[in-house]
Every structure is written in structure tokens, then in C-alpha cells.
Amino acid sequence: GQNIDQPTEMTATEGAIVQINCTYQTSGFNGLFWYQQHAGEAPTFLSYNVLDGLEEKGRFSSFLSRSKGYSYLLLKELQMKDSASYLCAVRDQGSGNTGKLIFGQGTTLQVKP
Amino acid sequence: NAGVTQTPKFRVLKTGQSMTLLCAQDMNHEYMYWYRQDPGMGLRLIHYSVGEGTTAKGEVPDGYNVSRLKKQNFLLGLESAAPSQTSVYFCASRQGTNTEAFFGQGTRLTVV
Image 1 (cartoon, rainbow over the protein chains, first blue to last red):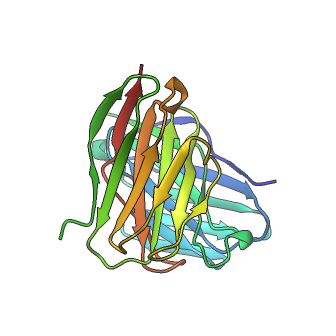
Image 2: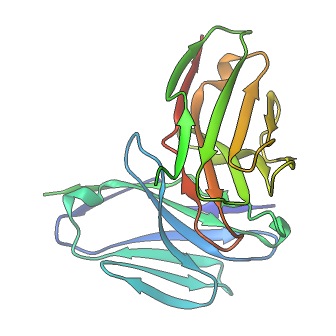
């Protein structure tokens, strides 16, 4: 079967660092995406990992370990505007040329002053 | 550049009524998708298209139909709405299978 797990909710303090984990079990693997979604808005793209290792983009970094079926999104120097849901999505082997993504349920991050 | 535009943004339907949600993208993308988002369940794929004139079923296709007569438009139809179809619907498009997907602003549908 296909399964993607993320924590439902997290809370962190402004200025701190937070790590949001994502574990997946899918039929093969063809890439992992992270999206940010503010309440009442559309998801927006944050990062894409297809090879093992860390991808850094400003305050946000994403890590992937294919052998462990594991990824995390690291947010540094948290700001109040980072309060949002963070969605992990996997493109599995079975998606072929369709580009279908399987989404986790999302992690709602609340940043407190 | 408008990106991905969904219409309408809000709608209330009575059980049994029909409606069509329109998704339009101006980025010449090949791939288009319809998702529904419900609390605690994340985004679930309803139907998708890999190019003009093609459609295929996703995870939760029952009760929905789609058409992609023009490359830029992807229509989602509800023939006989049910309360279980109350949800937020998102359309997305992407150029390639390893590229980012761009999402529309969503349609909030309530079926009473």
C-alpha cells in the first residue's frame, strides 16, 4: 500500500528552528515535494528532493533518505508568517508518466511570539 | 501572469443538483489535476489529465466526471451532488512529471 505520515500539529517559537518529519511507504519512489499552505489559500511549492541529501533554499532546507523512506523540512529563524500547514507529497514509481502525487495529511505549524 | 484560475470560488448546492468547476491555466502545461481537501485527510486526487483530450481516474473518482477538450482548461463535473462532496476543491497543473505543481485558489463547495 501507499502511506505518508506526518505529525498533525507542531508549535514553535519565533526565531527558533523547527523540523517537520515525513515518512513514506510507497511502491517505488520518484521524488518528494514539500508545499506550504496558509489557511484558506492554495498550496505553494517549497522544495523537491529526488536524491539523498540536503537541499537548502534560504531559511528552508529539505532532507531525503530514500533507504529509510524519510524526509524532513527544516525551518530556521522562524517568523510569524511561517504559521501554516506543510504538506509532504511523494511521486511513486507507479505514477509513471502521470506525475501523480500522493499527499500526506499535512502538519499545521503554529509559531508563537 | 494569472497562473491557475478556478471558478467559482464558492458555491452552495442542494443535494441532487449538478454543477461544473472550471480550471484554467495559462502556462501551457501538459498535466492537470483535480484534488479535494478535507480536514485531517490531506489532498486526495480525484481525476487527472496528461494532455489535451486525455483523462484518468485518481484515488477518489466516484461521483465526479472530467473533461479536457482544450489544453488550457480542465473541467470537473458533479452530476448529482451529495453532502459527502462538501469539500475544498483544488486544481493544479505542471509542465513535467518532476516539476513543481501550481495550484489554483480553490473552490469551497457546500452541499446541503
